[in-house]
Length: 297
Image (cartoon, rainbow, N blue to C red; front, side, top):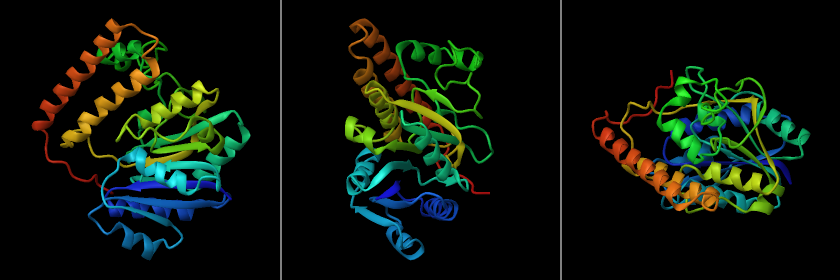
């Protein structure tokens, strides 16, 4: 039994993964932990690097990309009953020294916390806003579509999308946190189940948070657990498949969460709005520059 099992799903990005693992092994000292790297069908020699540089890490090797939720579930099943907490950690993150220690400490001090997320910052130090957010209700969709959250970021009504009115340096109870750094209690998983594998990528974290809160648990944003999140610039070309999955996953989770709360007309407007934005994003993506890995400077 360890305090936390850390699940890292990798699909290529060998150097980013190496930096992530270094930050975990060098910066975590007070809690006991195990690391499971799930190689999700990489073409780079992820397994060789992990075995050579980080022999304490366990490896799950997939011959194809099973998706984020399914791959994390493999690690969760491997350590079922062997950890008090499970941490989802993106391979494109660098964990600040002591961040994971503080994350587990916070969860221990808040027994009603089913899920806790940390503070994600971009390499330039700016907040990565999805690390704290509200559930995507029709109201939130509408304000986001009109960019009211950007025009009035301090408004409790219009700033719900990324909870921009909350102090990013204070802990808060929120609706959802980001799967790039997400600590979940073992008891919570036993109650609500594993991640929804229909969600290939995106929105699986929101779905888990919704299910946790529906079961009576609380979800917290905890900024003392600070992690640098390397992401490709938004101006670079993205995978068309990823664009599709972002919007499609949002729709799946919306219907799972709010399908019974709103009528068919509301659902129709949400569906048309999401898929119109998806088509626009696909068209814009044609004219973007080819995507490259972010700079590590």
